[in-house]
Image (cartoon, rainbow, N blue to C red; front, side, top):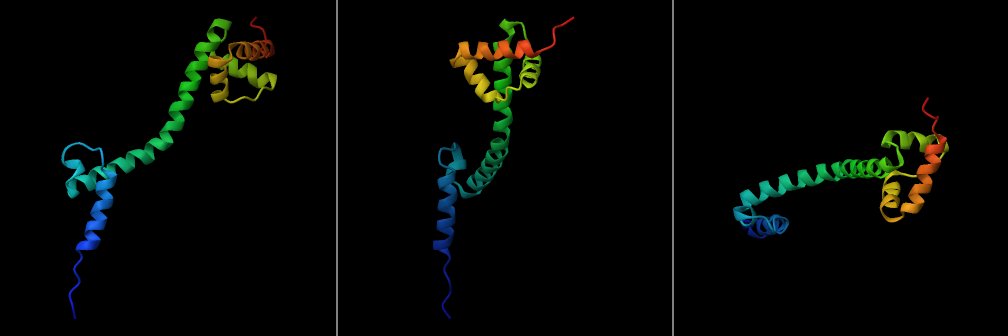
Amino acid sequence: MARVKRGVTSHARHKKVYKAAKGFRGRRKNTIRAAKAAVDKAQQYAFRDRKRKKRTFRALWIQRLNAAVRPFGLTYSRFIDGLARSGITVDRKVLSDLAIHEPAAFQAIVEKAKAALPSAA
């Protein structure tokens, strides 16, 4: 029985790893042992950060909204409370975008939210 030479399979597998390691620095891009470890770690980071990205952006929108409502004499939490009381259901991403690109529309929303809040006694 003829022996099986596995060079083709190994080469194909290695090629896949090298392709994923493209752009890495040093031995991490061209030595299979280092490249495999680097690619595995990169995939772990990518998986984790796809989840983390959602948190990060929500935090950014909240910071932007807080900064945008301060000139109107509100804080972020009071603004969100006012929105809930007035029945306005617009998500933070859209509100943040409005605050940046449509200040007049954002101001109208803030005034409605402010009107729905009980006056501070």
